[in-house]
Amino acid sequence: MPNPVERFGLVAEAAGARALRSLETLRRLGAFTLITLGVLVTRADRGRQLVRPLIRGQVVRAGVRLLPIVAFIGFALGLVIIGQTLRLLSQVGQTQLIGSLFVTVMFRELAPLTAALVVLARVGTPMVVELGTARALGEVEALEALGIDPIHYLVVPRVLGITVAVFALTVYLLLFALLSGWLFAVVSNLPVTGADYWGQVAAALRWEDFPLLALKTLAFGAVGALIACYQGLARPLRLEEVPDAATSTVAQSVVVFLVFDAAFLVVNLLLPA
Image (cartoon, rainbow, N blue to C red; front, side, top):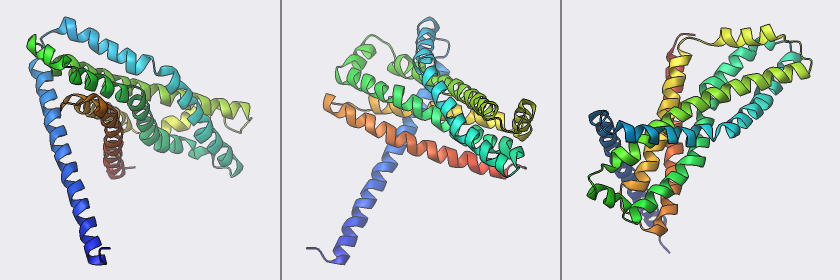
């Protein structure tokens, strides 16, 4: 049995190796992101007739098809968070706080993160399996042999389509959450009129909230799609390694989402009230 000093050394060595692997993954992901941005800029005018239908297909896949799920989640969050909190606030005569609650909890934090996680779970993970399988079967090399840039054909449409989808789903989730909260107040006969409810929400919003929401959702969508494409395409995969790549996609995306969320939280705190 190793003594305490040796155990500490083994733990430190394992932690150091894991940190180095994380830094190497971050470096490769950054390089993959720069390559994708370079292709997006330099080939923006090429193959529009081919790429645009692919982008629309990704918007349908990640946005339109997930709208019922997001609507249900938004409706449920509105009932649980807004409705129940509104009922508690009415008991202490503080219903005027509902606008600040919605903006702080739903608009700035929960809605963008929820929409991004739904898209990641329903589209991002299958995308890794799809791209990883294509790479393992040699389909990517076949595209290169035909003179087709795999980044332009496989990555750019997915990144753009998923980014737009996450933004749109976030907006729909907020609308359904607002609507269900108001319906809860009406059904429960709470002392809050429709004018008060919607007016308090509008009064709590700042103009900075709208560009920050757009930037946050676009960042979540782009980062999630880039990580999924990186895990599927950036290195050769054997078929048995594809599920592990999908698991890594979820773990890495969640970590990056939380880091971005913390950064936007700091920005919100620094803005004047």
